[in-house]
Image (cartoon, rainbow, N blue to C red; front, side, top):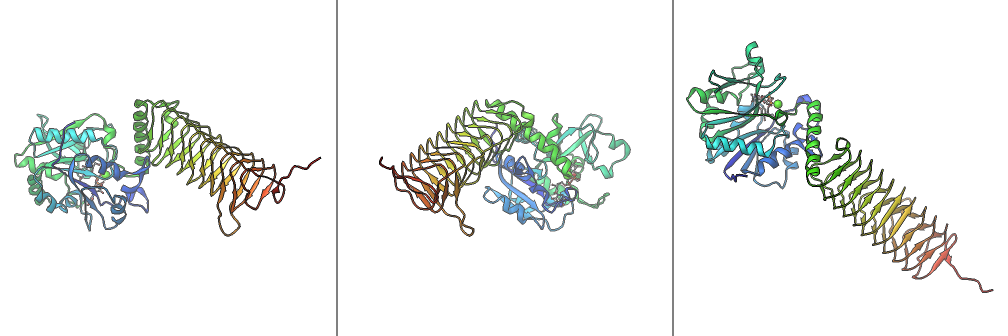
Length: 455
Ligand code: UD1
Ligand code: CA
């Protein structure tokens, strides 16, 4: 890949996005778990020396969502008077810049980094005044059309609403992505007017201007029309989601992950999965999740913001949220692991167990039908079927501490705050209200020390 470090990228994101019918700014709507704008910013970030974001008056949320990303500058476009007017807002930045200027839209998350790099490369090699990314569409309705002369040279771009019947029949369209020589861009912008059907300053009119001045304007035509899909409404959004998810799954398949039916598996864009992991159909893996090698993720599971070790077996219908699962562990079926759990290696959380905010030591098993909340459990402990950690007294949540090699009998209730020492035991059905010292067995309701009667 070529190295570029002198590209100024201007991303237009000031538009209202009215057609989304939403209270949320359009560019912050999510595609595969991330705001669409983040795809654009991250792509640009890989080759731009600086990025200017043109935001609208309500752009505070946009600014916040991008906090922490490097080399970003925000400029507010008070009134949305068109794409050309939007780019003029970055005049000072363009003046300071000597290399190429790339203009992108915040609502085109499907564009590949590779495509943008190629566009810049061609623009530089051919020493063009402007290079426009174009594609051909079955149905070009709504897009600006690419007008070429008889020799095939780009002459101008005409917007749908300004186009005559003959122009409307043209299927080659303007993607909106365009690379410019910085000083010629400023000159062309200074010569824009708004005498058109929408009364706007069109960035696209810079092409006709530069061409009339005898400057070189080039079209860069790409095959994959999907890349340039702009998100204007929820139908486009759903389509983009499908395309991005296919791309994500393909990447994991290439990396050695097996998916029995990729079309039914939903993986967010930041998820990492190790080689030889197997994923069954109808599973959703969200947020910042990572999964180690050789794991099995069953059907109908949902895993969010979690770290799963290697060779973990997550059986069907399990939910794991904001937790860590150590290597060689077994989860489910029908386990509900709520936020804040840290399971060490070789643990077992079995069927119909709900667990939250709890650490579970190595080799510990909670195999069936339990509720475990706000606890710390040691190593090689066994929690019998139907055990309840009664952590809530109606007002407050309390902690339970269970040591190593403890045996909790079936149907025990641990009324917290309470502590069970190492190698302690509880009899089936006991209700434990006081601490149990180590190596001690308690039974009954309320549980007391079990003393074997002499005969
Ligand atoms: C634009 C192009 C059209 C192209 C299409 C591709 C122009 C005049 N037309 O049309 O040739 O085929 O994109 O999707 O450029 N924006 C601002 N400030 C403004 C106006 C727009 O920031 O004052 C932003 C919008 O938020 C959006 C982008 O610019 O991200 C494009 O604006 P939009 O109104 O959607 O342009 P189109 O009509 O789709
Ligand atoms: Ca658009």
